Image (cartoon, rainbow, N blue to C red; front, side, top):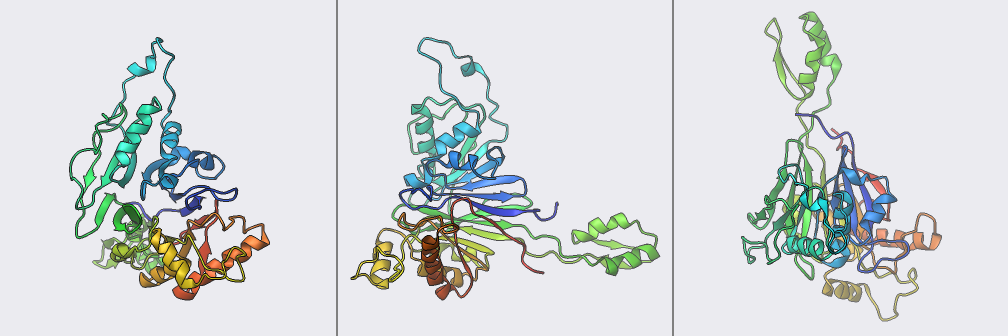
Length: 387
């Protein structure tokens, strides 16, 4: 098996809640794993946002939808059209040769994961926009226990490029374990509480090679005239027996990186077992009480009243995010999904910086560590934990 990903990087394409602003777009997050890109949510204008970012749209392999509110999914159909060589139909009465181009549905498809309704939304959107796509996609739905384990939840027939291999994934002990897994990375998910069914995702890198100390091995290899190329096997944690019977053991493998991406939520408790010891937690912080900092703060508001109002709408405050990050032992907390009243240009505007620093401080007080407030186009590297 190959070693760790050379780079794991998060790029925030949209950090707004509900309505976009001049400084924040609707929700979307890109996770780069080496040269591959996975998207989490795809709000309106995500495709346009990608064109202004360093993320290469053609590298997108998978799209994970947390829930089907428009600010998290309205950009999915346009993105598929751009990603899969989409086009409109021919004029009435004209024969369109593209209708006869065979689509190999067995070739690797862009994978879409989401709650019940994701498949119906994609089919309907493609049908009624008369979109032609040149490559396949597939939708996997994460079904809740009270939802039908079979069927597509729509009478709309599959689009001609929709792969028939889409799964309806059932929960096991209240979560969806390993909805995707290969030799290097896996994805699990859990339901989190919002105003509609919502999903949080946990991306877990497989164990990676330990740090090798050449001085421990090279003298033994030279002494027994063993080719130094065997070091690559030791680096992966393997063992070898030298010509004199000496056995060399490579360094033990160590845990890979864990990234937790939460959708909108006022209570993500169900994902706690999957999220423990995360390297990064991305948690929404839609509203905050900022007396003396935010001029829009009302005189009769309190921390408690703002939290109650925020929770009633299915969302979280910075303090709630900090409490969750501490609960799971996260090494890093990134706040996301901010109300339009909080400008996202704090890198260049002093007033916005003051507000965002205050929001981060509210979370940090509960979390006990450093907190990052995401802004659009911000990129964050996820380093391997220290050995």
